[in-house]
Length: 463
Image 1 (cartoon, rainbow, N blue to C red):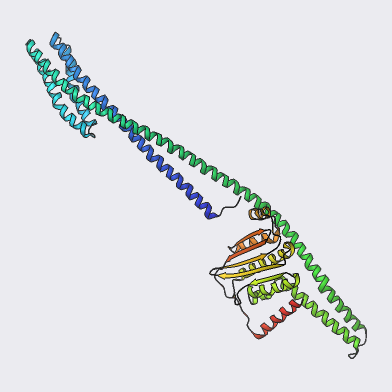
Image 2 (image 1 turned 90 degrees about the vertical axis):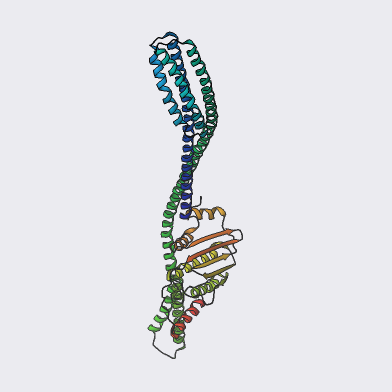
């Protein structure tokens, strides 16, 4: 699994946060709407209940009045009085409940005078009985008048009740729909949160796995670095023993032979020994310079990466018989010291790997500097690497030796990037390093300096 950059992780985090905020806002809005719809459903039920209570109060007053008029039983008066007191209160409460409905307000404006007339007729009928007047005809007229008023009152109340039934159906439908949307939003929020948690958990597990692999790679790299260091020391010691040591030993034997005999300047044999010794010492000096330059070329400090790269590629081509083409500007200029050193080490390691592993007869090196970055590209036409090996190196930084891992680490320390592409047609290594603010690099421009450098290059190229 590829590693995710810090910017990508921030993007994932911000997107996850936005999803959670959006679902929270949606859930809040939908639940608020659901609570509002439920409130209006409950309000409609309250209005319907109030209409029923008003009907009941009017019927109770009518029933108590009829019982009192028919029997004269004063025990019915408290019931009548209670009903008469309830009716105005029920009517006022109904008016407050329907204050949001213009049509219902108009109906109540029509209903109130009818109710007041009805209560007035009931009160006249009861007052007549209280005075001891038993006028059946008058009571019959009161009853007929009350019946007509009650019919009008029922018509208004029925219309109001029908309107509330319509509102109730609409509000119940809206409430059910809002409830369904609330369920959908909450379920979506749950699944979104679950997906985010699972994705975050998977990413954490992947990062932990990558970290473990990276730690294993670091441990392996540390051990291999120690082995490579020992091998490099053995190689340098062998080079010194096989080349410089043999040359100095031969020169020493010649000088010993001269020391044991008489010094005769005109002796041809002595002259040959001296000439041979001088030649051996010159070759030893050249070997020493070559070894020193390979470890750290003075051209890199004196004239910069461009000159050092050309010199190294020329020597590498002559030693390895690999035709290396270099594409670099004639006046490449200087760069920060750490950038030049990093590019030179990448160039050394890349060409060394081509010689050891690629079996390529040609290679190309391209160096470009534009803006605030410098790019080094090394291309060979060898057998390449397998995709599995390359993927393992990209993931764990292991599997391709210490040199490539060291190259990548050196580039990363400078804030750069290193990419590798490989197939059966060859391998491409691309390194891009940002250029920090250039510091002053001491330059020596004297004629003796240039002559000395030219002599050094000539001596090492002949070796």
